[in-house]
Image (tube, rainbow, N blue to C red; front, side, top):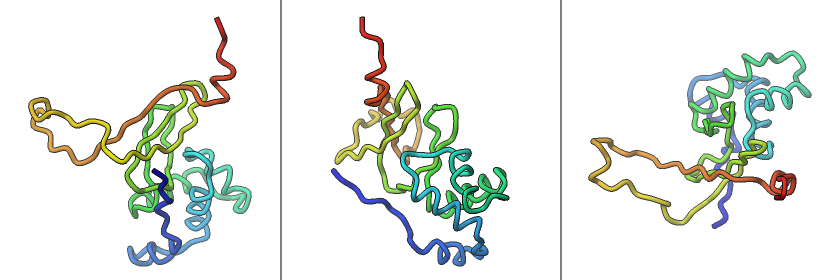
Length: 147
């Protein structure tokens, strides 16, 4: 099932509604995440933003990313790839993660892949479900040694 990005084109409106200033740094970080391919980490976003704002600090990028996450404009992902990733697609979905290079791709499923049986929920009130599929992306698969 194909899904479109859940992107709010009016980030300035979302910031103002929360009483936050619309700054060039916030706009640039938001744009970098939305235009990214894959699910970048903060350092990748910082590199992209520095092309237009050479003096922006990595700390500022982190602060803006956390603000955007709090606003629901991006999702923060811990996919055990060694760094937190940021996802511009905020709608419900899952991920493919390459165990070779750490590349991440979205997966949209019509139905939940699994349910926790009531007897095994151990008192948890389950609010969300995230599934991560791990394997090799096409470039890493091509590089895999053949036996």
